Image (tube, rainbow, N blue to C red; front, side, top):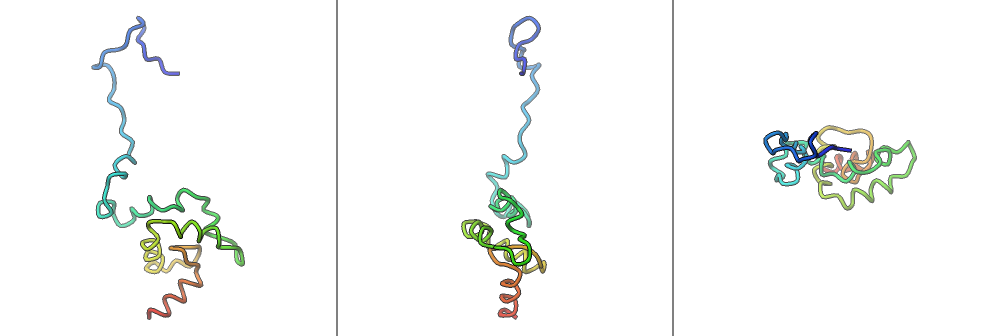
Length: 109
């Protein structure tokens, strides 16, 4: 437990107290999309708060759980754009499986 009192039982002076550390993630709560850099969307992705194994199922495994998470995610479009631009070959990205992303790329080209 922290000792808030000095050796004499009194609160230390404000000058002796170190400034409280600012958590680095506080700023990210107030940044705009333009301010968070090209990969900042990943910090806001719901999958970052979920079991990553759901997004990389074994061959033939269910993608239902991952797609359900993606359906409510605010950065789904950015995620899919990243996966298509970087030719991600594994996992669920932007709510689509590898097969679905390949099919989408063929339709666009």
